[in-house]
Amino acid sequence: MSPAGRLNASVTRLNGSKSGWPAKAVRVGELLPPDRLHPAVLAWTKGRRKAETWSVAFSGGADSLALLLLLWAHWPERRDRLVALHFNHRLRGRESTADERFCRRVCAALGIRLRVGAWVAGRASRARVSEAEARAARHGFFAAALKSLRGRALWLAHQQDDIAETMLMRLARGSGLGGLAAPRPVQPASGGRLHLRPLLTLKKQELVAALRRSGAAWREDSTNEGDAYLRNRVRRRVLPAWAKAAGRDALAGAALSRELLEEDEQALDRWTDVVAPPDRAGRLNLRALEGMPRAILRRALHRWLLARRPRPDLSRQGFEQLLAAAERNQPTRFSLGRNGFAVIRDGRLVFEKI
Image (cartoon, rainbow, N blue to C red; front, top):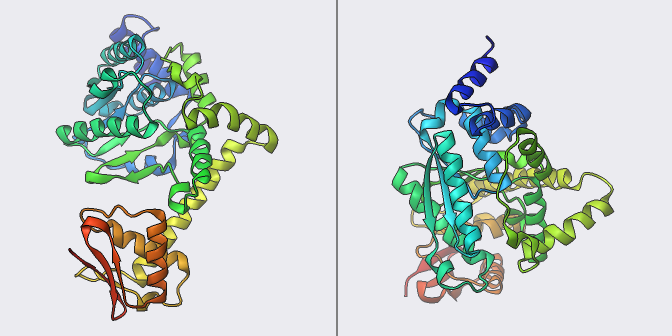
């Protein structure tokens, strides 16, 4: 019997029929083989420790369901170290409760551990909350779960449609290279965590088609049908018109642009490291940056600010003012709020506490 035949036979024994979740996972894996996933994520998986825990964000929607099934199908040796993380925002009443029940059923059928978090603020106030507030609460739960599991890998189900949506949203607010290169396939996060996005090479419709062909159902978030949030408006109104006007595969084009922007960002990071690394005292040598492109100085200053603890709460206008002062390399004492001062003297940028 072929390996695929043996796997299907074992799935039938596990599930009692060929219509359960293990069989659906196998079918989705057949329709979306590993070489369809992002190569940077595949490269990361090579040589990983078998005892390493992989956590996957699982909302119950089509994207996260497809990701969970693909992880189960393509990395069978990891199944006992795979943990699904479901965050119940409690913003849709019974629908949110039904989402959680669905995730519990899927994970139980696949033999995957599930951890559930709930947002107290969401239940207490059914009023509209911002996307940023909901995201912060969700990722707070993810961070706490990874810490307790002693894992660092968090798998996320962003796909090509998300790339285009994010790019258009960030263009509207004037984001630079770093913002436009998101979401990244392999992205270091705070606390030593690592965010992995293997589906960036796939479109939403491809994931949905694979789920339908496997017979898998998923949960739909009714708030996605409204226009209350910017991402929904971009998804429902802008993307279809943009793709139609382009007359070509605009989603693939946005994904390619994201890849190129990330390459440029990495090149600028490497250049900045070579030209002006901070010294052991955390001082930035502005003389070494004289004559360099402004993008290098901007990046060096941004990194210098991020290294401050606690991080300064500096507005965009404040950053531009400090950037201009650093570019002139003239003696300056610039307030960073309660954190202290950015001081330019003797050709160096230093931090002084209040």
